[in-house]
Length: 122
Image (cartoon, rainbow, N blue to C red; front, side, top):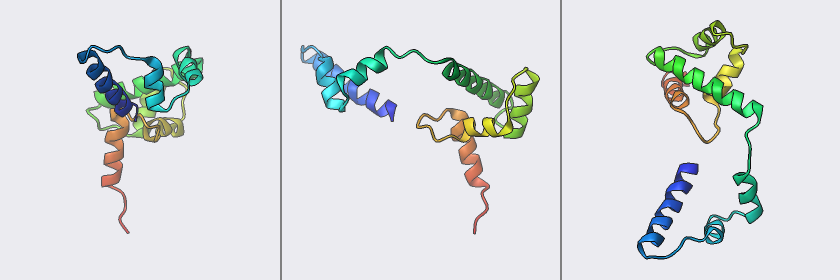
């Protein structure tokens, strides 16, 4: 979703630059339907320690998955994470991999496709 918004804003910005016009932040916010206070809150947002930790774990999961040539599932990825000293449950790893968070990493997408292929058909 954010990529679509980014592309649309980029197109509008490029069109304005080519036409020799300046790009107004207020105009873009109005176009996107975002309040000025919401924009400022997003602009000055500092990620929490939990967000940073989740991002680091997701990066480790991606590395383990890529190193396994995209063969490992949740149980093996969990074992590999625990070998590196990470205290994490299988359920949490599964949540990170299969979470519909609107911003899927390649692990999520690949594993979702794999899961759909082998799902029991009624």
